[in-house]
Image 1 (cartoon, helix red, strand yellow):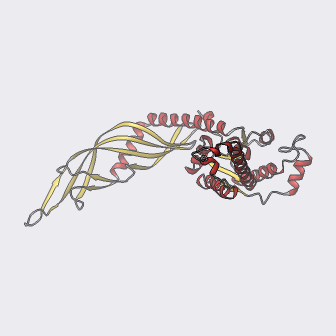
Image 2 (cartoon, one colour; image 1 turned 90 degrees about the vertical axis):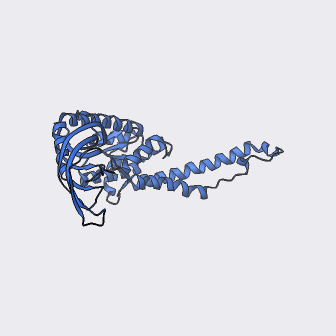
Image 3 (tube, rainbow, N blue to C red; image 1 turned 30 degrees about the horizontal axis):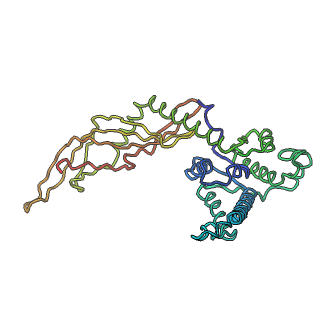
Length: 342
């Protein structure tokens, strides 16, 4: 099963990856990556080089749009003679000064909402760049000798990796970036963003299946832990919030459904649709009449359905659950016993 796992959940998108998706940040691939970053399922990296290049490409795309709009108006000028007047497209004006802040905001929103981490390039040394350039080492090559922006980004990522100790995916359809990854075993090249999204989804699907399999294998133990956690909750009685609730005992449990909420190579979060039958001693004082308060005691049998969520950590190579934590019932650790008598 371990071969289906992602090598890492840290990704760097080269400028070409954004260009391949036509800077369409609402498109399926970039939107998916942003959402995964927002949910901390992925760590997305960028550099000042990529940031400036994308901003430049946004400006170029919008400038081209303004030019195309003016050409369209010229081609449609004949329609100005219509008795009903010129169509709105001929009357509208597009100005780059108005569009550019909007386009840059889209990029900045992607960085912010995707929790994109900016990798510093300040420590990249000129000697490193010159060595790569004159020795024609990736990302420089005999055909592409002016890849200084790429080289700055890659050297910055190399330093980030040394400090972080982790691996990362480099996404972009550039043979020189591929060659760089071939000489850096802890960096993994993926040519297109859609390829990485497909890889991610396949890995998630298999990991989700593994999470369910591990639950089914350890169901008796997990349910026993859930039962213990239920008994440790704080209980109150809806019919009398000051009543004492004691001696809670579970009669039976039944699982009606399993949902995988979150999963990666080290942990998963499941939510179980669980029926729990239990009883409890409920006692208190009744103040319904003018007489002295009457003490009451009852032990109702209660059947309730809960969304029982928990997190499990596990070892992927051995496929063994290590521990359970954060067990909640309808996202709470407080249980309200309904008023059996209305």
